[in-house]
Length: 195
Image (cartoon, rainbow, N blue to C red; front, side, top):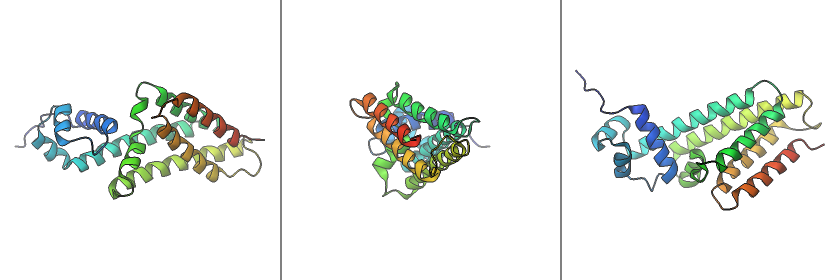
């Protein structure tokens, strides 16, 4: 008969996600995880493997949740430009909100571990690809609705917006974030819907 786990795996993964997101991979020790989760080291290793395995599991969980939310936002019926505007505004609100300085786990992982960590790179790249495709689809819808100027290229605009969105996450960690982020979003929207 197998032993019952001493802890809730989903709760432990969410707690580890929060810790890794706040502290980063290198600054989070196994002892930190044991203390933060209140779980024995042997149980962590038995359930999640190495610290790196646990980090990858937490990052994948975060990316999947974030990607699903973004896909839902950008594929909602209605104006494509309005969907993109809501996404940009939502990023700024998240960044300037209570958890703002913690940053996006995907961006944090990219800054800390790319290009030297292939497992993390795959998750980060997949997340960026998902965002870029979702933006492209929203912008294609906007073009079909006559919201974009003649000759606009949704794929190129989506790549530009992907860069802006990831840059917002990085700049959100600095001082004077609100004015920088709001100015960047305003300029991105002007580029998007220029006449």
